[in-house]
Length: 372
Ligand code: PEP
Ligand code: MN
Image (cartoon, rainbow, N blue to C red; front, side):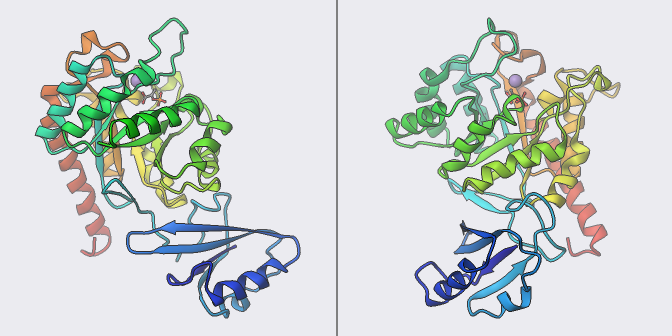
């Protein structure tokens, strides 16, 4: 059960004290308090964990300062939607950018940082096309121990400085160890905070619970959690709940395809049909990663790359973020060159994204009788 307090009620209010004292005395119930930073105000939610069946919603609602009481109907206590009227926000802000289930951001960039020249070419192209987000891999989880593992902390300074130079506000950057969070924090501090970072937890680490706890305990950076490529959606959503249960509610859930030969010749089986499913079950904005789903630059007979097709499919179904590999010289890329889009493709890719987004908005208006 979740008790949502009225926006002006904080821990030092009389009303808070009264309801909290009452709740504390309930047998077999543990309390967990979460303060949610909204755009205008901080909302306080009290989670009741344990034997809540016999509790009366009406009795709790009658306390002064209580706005709403929601019974939890499924396992994602914090991130889930628990009732038809559970319209608690899906929105969060980071470094001046709003992320929600209602908007869309493109994170085009390098799968792996290779050198300052390519990073700069990428950032320059992004700025020229009005983009303020990117992806830049410094820590790469590789299947083969002898493959390039990413430049790690040694590239962070120039990546952050160049991001600042070209007005990039958020960089999605994978971490594979909790010490990477400190390295990122330190490099941002040393460079004077020219940009922001969204920590990315990759598909190989979706159920690395200690890493999830570390990323969840810090609330400075939002987290993009990729679904696990060989586990159920429910298991991956539970992994997201790990982050939230530690205190970080700024979470985006990423679909990136499932590992099975049934998706051949694509690298993974594209799973973007689950965009609306994740939006219905949880309040997380949903990201699609066409690059790691498709894994190639093959095109249909009309000349449109499969990468463009699946991106449009995800967006037309309501995706809120696109994480996509680009490279100025894919043949020189140290990781995933064959699936990278070219810088000269950036304008057509962004235009195609807009076409798909408009189609999604039109479909929404159609179904809602013109109300969008
Ligand atoms: C990536 O985005 O670079 C990546 C490694 O993705 P995934 O974890 O989905 O394989
Ligand atoms: Mn990659």
